[in-house]
Image: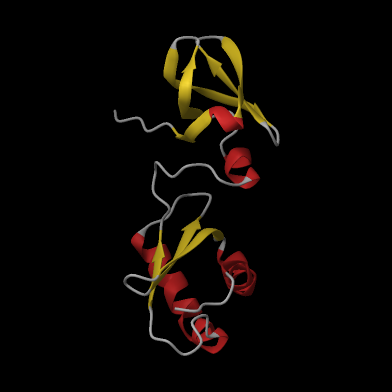
Length: 152
């Protein structure tokens, strides 16, 4: 199915998201089931009411935008999930000073899985404090980095 560029769709939707305190973190189109999913985040997290409110706010405007050139699709609004990998500089900014999990392609200091505090990042590296030591990890060595999930 032919669809409009997702970056164009994101730019179109941001004026609806901003006044609601919502950040669009990702957009995914799955051709298999013809579903368009808008992943959103807020400072206080995302619940079902937030997803419903944003869905209702964009439902008619997105039909006018016509992302699928009149082809039928299902619109979904969702939380990105607790274990969503960091993709954008904003993801890293939002998590500075917080506990993260890093999965590596190859061992570093004898480990392929690290957990620590996100201390810094730039275009090519991420610095994580692990047991009091700051490790500078090249992004191309990371299979995944996400917020650490703690169950009490």
